[in-house]
Image (cartoon, rainbow, N blue to C red; front, side, top):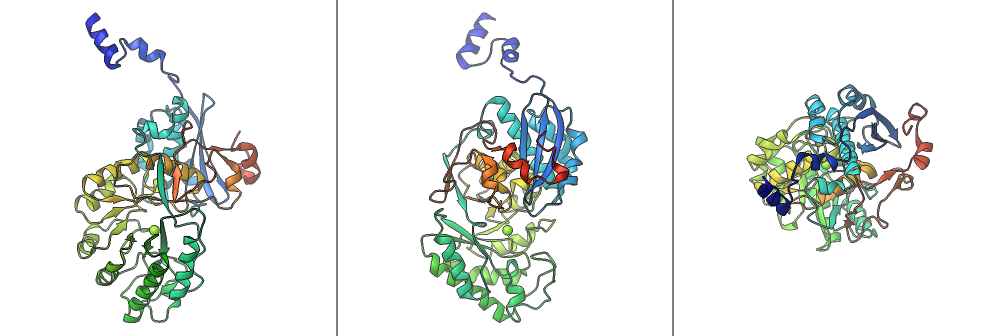
Amino acid sequence: MAEAADLGNQIGIPAARGAVDEHKAHPDMKITDLKCAVIGKNPVVRIVTDEGISGFGEAEQYKPYLKPFVLFYKPYLVGEDPTLVERTMHKIRRLGSFKPWGSAVSAIEMALWDIAGKAAGLPVYKLLGGKVRDRVRVYNGAYRTPPAGCEPEDFARSVQEMKDLPHGFTIVKQGVAFHSQMKREVPDFYYGEPQPHLSHGILDRGLLTARGMKHVIACVEAMVEVLGDDVGLALDCGPGWTVPDAIRFARAVEHLNLMWLEDMLSGDYVPFVNADVYRDLTHATSTPIHTGEQIYLRQNFKELIERHAINIVGPDPCDVGGIAELKWVAEYADLHGILMAPHGTGNGLLGLAALVQVSATLPHNFIAFECPKGDPDWWYDIVDGLPDPLIKDGMIEVWDRPGMGVDLNPEKARRHLAEEDAAFFD
Ligand SMILES: [Mg+2]
């Protein structure tokens, strides 16, 4: 036994069980409450524990209605040890789904990691295996004003504005075709009727006219002309394209070396995955094809990845089931030669912190994540701990504080709470 203990010491294994327990800082931490408040437009989750540590998570600003979905999970969480993140997730992951249920589960997962990190005194990236990069690249899908019109010069002006920003973004993303007003404002753009109230839903789709196809291509050429070789251009395209048009377009822009074409066939708020159809597109062109921001859980990426149906996956940590879920997808994609560019445009500053923590740990198939911003601007005043400047040369420095490493400042945030959420920080 003595020899075994010596060997254990040499290779860092504690000699006896008692040694493990002594170093367990929080042996029986328990969740006592789950709260949700809409701050500005973003739903924010707070998990309260019996040891005075709280964890925070945030969902995207396009879901201000999310509160009842979050609170549904409270009875499954109270009494659980939040530092056992995976065991706690077993209680609720099975009760999630594509948006909006998966968004609620995701925000909770990130709040659990925040607690686990704070309890251990470690940044979350260390709990996920450690960082492999000290700075993470971000791309710009949120720091911009949309094009003023639908003509090539409007698109050129819009990307010029993005190129001129002090953040130094090296990749920008622009919405075109069905992910823009082109479908409504360009006369005879496609053989279909745009729906009045859906921005880019599955109901707006159809074959493009020859004029429509030429128009999109002209707008893309105008943007590449502005961005040159300095800044990569990604296009959010739909969904809404038919397969023949998607192939024709992807081939027509091959010489422009675009970063990727996103969500042409399905994606965004579409509650299903279309792996076989994506495969037809991806294998017909050298332009990289991207999708996945709407997908809940690693299992729903399986077919896309195993069938090599896309070139780049783009899960959103606030929809896929959280940051550990996203990391799993990234690792599995990497085994199949598929790249990773996480989505995140509406995830707010707590969502940004979560993206920084997980992106620091991803394999080298990681390209960049879509950088969320504080909206309204006062969000930057109520979150402590972000670097200043936040984005430099299109990169964010990974910080080293425990948990997600940023704090919602109760004194400053309280004044932005709705009356019904007044007790959020109590
Ligand atoms: Mg998108």
